[in-house]
Length: 239
Image 1 (cartoon, rainbow, N blue to C red):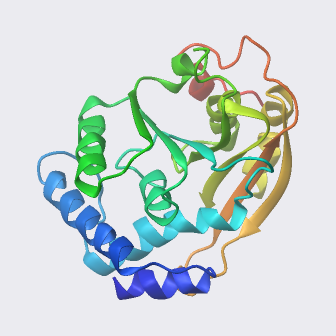
Image 2 (image 1 turned 60 degrees about the horizontal axis):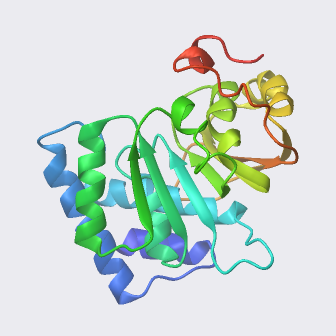
């Protein structure tokens, strides 16, 4: 895990021997399960260290611990194989993590990796975000909502901000030219109770392409009718 270790140090962080071994196990299990189900197109050892694990940990550049709280509550929406949530949990074992994905097979992998890595304080939900966000035990309950999902920002905002408590944040990982996408999400952000705080460029030589963290703070409660029913945020984003 030398590429991961080196990259993490550039983020001002460090991984101990136990954490590096957890990443080794995570990689082996990901590749093994990928032979039976489609979890990822990236299976090369060094490429996975950079584009799965290090990429996930760049989220730390946008994290701020709320005052008076012992640990962050984080929900990873559309988590797939557990990215970025599981790498963050390995790095910060004290966070309370919820992994949300609508695919049962992926949830099976997540349950397996949770047990294999001995992760505590992790909940796995197999359901659509549009429906879970209306359940009282999850609505506006999280300090941070994350998503690496390949969807327009306007759609992601509707799927994620309802989970954030007022004072919390949504962090989206994006690549390439995103100025127009951000402009197109302005209505969604304001309607859902958010405010764009920052677009932070990831400046690491490990990434030849342009990568960004779009950080949206939750400044007021989300209206009860959002998110709309399953599929609508993607088909008719608020623009």
